[in-house]
Image (tube, rainbow, N blue to C red; front, side, top):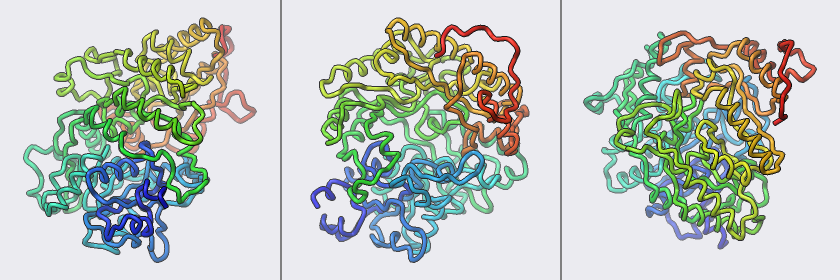
Length: 583
């Protein structure tokens, strides 16, 4: 019983143990409840708890039958919070070929079927049916990336803002700690009429007076349906604003209403991020799961995230759109406190699986002159060239690595997160490669064709080749025999069969047998997805070739497997230079 009190309650029995007569906020999530700062429901629940609110979590509620899971806590005093979980539910459920996945990493034993398709919409519609007058606030990656008109790959059509079908009262986009707390405080103070002014939220309104002066008016949902160029232009305007520190309100008409997207909060401080990580997480799944295996938890169980945000700006990635472009780093002291806490868990074996972040080597990096950053709207600080205002100081991250290495209760501290090899110093590379690679270092060149890489906002293939040489040299000097494992993507917008032939030639020349490969999957509200749907580059207006049909996508993917006895379309070039190393 005592252990139950260490977690946020998930049942009436647990609220009774606390002596609660009501709950302030009931949080519904499509994931299992894991009390770890890598999972949004745990973080938001702990933040709200620290602000003095009573929070209960309903993980993976049964949406069939009598909806008893949606009723078990009754009417909350303030609001319902809804998230599909750590992934968009459609990405979670379906492959790039639109086939149903056979497992779900965020569910006990990896069993599929614990959440519905379009999870956020389903949960909201049930709550609105049962409690029509209780505010419903949605957030998480699914809601965040669907806040405006977006292309849905699984229905192969444009869909309006998720606010339309979910009937939610408010949408929180991005990292929601500040917005969720402010919403709770305003409702508690009987200021419900001011909810539409909370930063980093979006809402649907029929009242034109709620549109602030100076707002950017996007093409309507109906116009976007009729004209792909208008949808492309909508994306361009949205992405430009999301990359700014100081943003402008976005408004999109849909039917006889308007979706209003308020500007986000400024990036939080290191002190604020430390406070979030210092909350009393148990770093384990809720006791209700007993000894059940939850794959997503096992993957991050011994990991330590050192910062938020990413200024890489990759076309297919949602990290900068969701977490922000600005890097917000934890202090060294906060990181060490978490490692000490992990070392006290009963099954600790002294190994940190990942000492990283969205891009591990961006820790503590920012603009030299932040006043210039406040005027900047670039999607990437690295592409098409590294910003001259970027402070490329690897000292803080190297210091963290060396300090953790010396801890008596740490045997190994690996870096499992992605690294940007176009953001590199030899000193950092030496520390990383000789001390923090578990035998295989995974990097993501994604392709070798510079024309495709330009569409992806990724560095030139020559950058990868230089890093590969550095990797091999440092391994040789240290007497190590580690592997460099590259990730590749087929069927990205702009990628032709000739580009895939070039990639097959390159991988064969280097004796790579690609393992980490994937077919491009369009996910809501990314540049790559916008190009996939429209066939247009939103920034130039130029047409973009797209392998759109299942047959075209499958054929491109087959180029990866030139070494297998398949019907690959690969035709090798007749001559190759003899490789000097098999890494």
